[in-house]
Image (cartoon, helix red, strand yellow):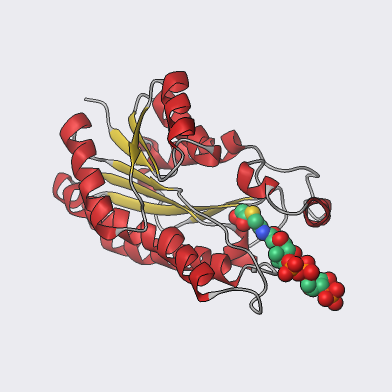
Amino acid sequence: MARVAVVTGGTRGIGEAISLALKEAGITVAANYAGNDEKAAAFTERTGIKAYKWDVGDFDACAAGVQQVEAELGPVDIVVNNAGITRDGTILKMTREMWEDVIRINLGGCFNMAHAVFPGMRTRKWGRIVNIGSINGQAGQYGQVNYAAAKSGIHGFTKALAQEGARFGVTVNAIAPGYIDTDMVAAVPADVLEKIVAKIPVGRLGQAHEIARAVAFLCAEEGGFVTGSTLSINGGQHMY
Ligand code: CAA
C-alpha cells in the first residue's frame, strides 16, 4: 500500500511543491493548510491532492487532524513540517504577539505534529519526519529574532528527535532553505530583497521545486540512513 504523508502548509509555496513531489513518488498526500480556503480548493482542483484545514500551532487540532487523515487515508508514515509564518520587525517594534505567534506556529507546530504521529511510526517501525528550517535560523537575520529563534529551534529539535527515532526506523531531518521565490519572500521590501539577492553566490532566488526534490529523497526508502542532518539549500549564501 502507498505510504501516507502529511505536508503542513502544503497547499502553497514550498509546501505545494513538496506535496507534488511526494505525490509523484507514489505517496498518498494530505496537504494541511491553516486559512486560505480559496487557494486550498484551487490546489486540490489542480493537483487532485486532498487538503485538510487545521492550525499546526494548536496541539489538539494537530491530534484531531492526524486522526482524520488516518481514518480517511491510512496510518501516517511521513510528516513534512513546512508550515510557517513571518512577523518581521526589529526588536524595538516587535510585540509579544509577533514573538509568540511565530514560536507557536513555526516551532510549536513541529512538536505538535511529531507528537501526534511518532507513536504510530514507532510501533510500525518506519517513519520520516522532515522539518523545514531556514538559513535565517543558521545565520540570524536582522529584523527576525522570532523567526530565527524558531527556525534555529527546529534544527535542534530535529537532532534530538532523530536520536529518539533512530532505533525505530524513524528518520528525522531538516532542510534549511535560503531565499526561495514564494509569497513569503515576495513580502520582503523590494530594496531589502535586492540587497539580499546580491549576496547569493548563484545570483538568484531558489525555486520551490529545488527544495521539494530534497524532501522527496529524505522521505524515500533510500533515505533510511540519513538522520539528524540539516541540508542547506541556499545558493551558497551561507555555508554552514
Ligand atoms: N543590518 C544592519 N542594519 C540594518 C539592516 C541590516 N541587515 N537592515 C536594516 N538596518 C538598519 C537600517 O539601515 C536602519 O538604520 P538607520 O535607522 O540608522 O537608518 C535601521 O536598521 C532600521 O531599519 P528599517 O527602517 O528598515 O527598520 P524597519 O523596522 O522599518 O524594518 C525590517 C526592518 C522589517 C527588518 C525590514 O528591514 C525587513 O523586512 N528586512 C527583511 C527581513 C528578512 O529578510 N526577512 C526574511 C523573510 S523571508 C523568510 O524568512 C524565508 C526564509 O526562511 C529565508
